[in-house]
Length: 372
Image (cartoon, rainbow, N blue to C red; front, side, top):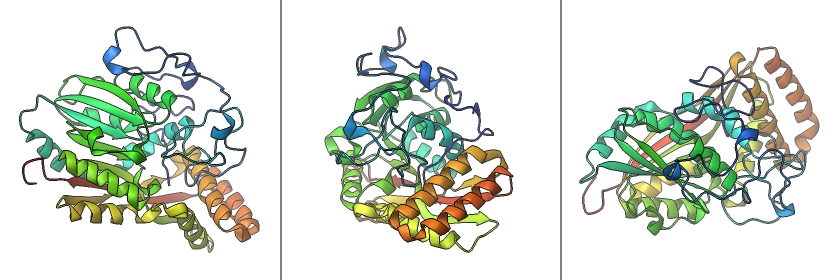
């Protein structure tokens, strides 16, 4: 499942339409963000589209980029409504394919993502980055960056100068990620940002030349085996580590339990594997691919733990989770509708807790010309 934001996370505003405050621009409302870039912020918004390319507020998307009202985004909350902007796509798709993420969903999940990510993987990553030869700073490629939540989480946890290269298909998300990026590392060193609009599912080794680190969040499970192989090959070719977080594990625990929990979970997992996507198999496949190239791989749990403080996130997650299950198995609809109503009522009453299992993966490839 995709994740969301909680009011308890550091800097979270708890209001829709705002990214949690972080170093850099604070609490910028989505509807207030405009291009061009801020004066004097050339390094933070390089390659940004101009005003003719970014429209804010309510925007009519092209017919081929539009999802109908009530369409299901697997595990990612409701699809965009007519008149809203379509967002991230990982590859060329047909006109009926819905967008995967809306910025409101990415905002909603950001706090929960931040709490869930595994800090246990940071020490081995810091050691590797500190031992890079001849480096006065690190270059970090964030794949499928969305609104930039990975940078807001990771940059302030690493020492030293950092240059982040943000990759996404959506110019609106890229612009927001650049403007809302951190400006300082853990030790006060400078953090700079540039953006690259492109298809992360078509990554080539050349795209990562000079990279010190590759990062991504909630990405692996929406890739195919071939796309994971391409990602792994690119990382290994560049000799850089990869921190790939928040991949679905295919396990969900709801309290109190319901007899339909397992049935919905099975149908959702089947939906995640549609069209050759890896879904809950992604971490295993990625680990095997890195290991085949001689990389050292560490995996750590990174579950969402949703309770009474996370009502908005839990409700949106439930709608997406059940909706994807019904899309996969329409015969569940009547019972699933009743199940969803009951679950939403329990959520609103503060009587439901949800554990959504994910995994974080750190792969330490052999440095170019050396050993790991």
